[in-house]
Length: 544
Image (cartoon, rainbow, N blue to C red):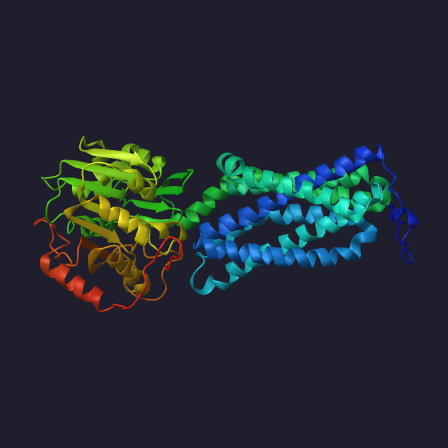
């Protein structure tokens, strides 16, 4: 059944509501509209994923950030669809304007967010509300504009050839969903690895404005007044100029922003398939700082305090075979090799790029003492949980979990009951496991949840904590510096199979930062923060 055209409201020329006057055959015009739907859907999903990725990277807690961004965008899409009803009598001009603004906002969003993060001191403290509001504002604006696309495109495709509403909607959404698939795959496999987040967003914006402008100014140009055509053309060229200029300056901008975030001593900055790795200092007598995804993992003189506290109490006993989960920087292996009885050290690291740097970068090799070149050290690049599930062989005397804090969403599986059950399986009956469980002072609930999870997996833990003096690295799941005024510390749990917690001993007599008296005091300080009756964390119910 062919539907009659709706009568035009007063003041609207009939030519804007009747059949479109196309420069091509109707079938070709309809195909071109569907191609534009496909391209715009791909661009829209890239904007969404880019905001989610940037929010997770800059703020942390990827589940929360993804939920906030996506829920705000979906809500805004509904509002945008309702608002587009007012533009249906000017569908061609309205669609051109929407795509122009969307290309500018979406294309520049990553650079704007990174600039605010870099030059306002991060996402914590007095600046916390502003940047997070900016993230929500971008999500809201992009959602409104994406939501306005479909009603306008529906009007345009109906003006080419009227058909039943169900058929038109099916065609439109088929192109939209396929485009979203392509955009969703292009973001992690093409844009991020080859262009990066900043340039990738800018290129997406350029594709967006070209596709929208070509459809309106090429296919529906006869629906536009001369003034509207020139306005859209100049606006589109202006947006392209802005995006092109930003892309040309992206490297300089990223370098300046990186210096604002990490300081002026940045020597290495690489985006791997796993994380961003930044090395600062480490040469000419300057302390080495290692950042992983923006979080300081090795900082100044404190790295000795952290790694001595992590490794040596666990090796105060049999230690012929040692397993290090994480520790791709080689610093934990350096401390392990200080013990004479070590015959084999297996290091399981997820990121091969970090291992390459640990073997080749002069600052990092000086810090780890070329530990990864020792013939007793064997490095495997794999996910720790997957590796534990598949490993078969002799049991280990010591297992060292040198992993990111449990509060980081991607790491929660490495602090689960299932993970510790697998870890216990590879331990010898007399074996010991040590876990870095995050800061005790600022996040006691997460720390004692790790302890409860270890007990549920059949491992008896002994808690202790060590204060940082220099930089206080690895203090929590957020990139922002801690502003509570509490001292930076690292919490550890030394555990053994069975019901008897292992005693704390320094492991080596010549350590400067660890003594038996200091460890006893550290154990008492950790126990004073104890929270009881906490449920364990599991893969299906993470509690950090």
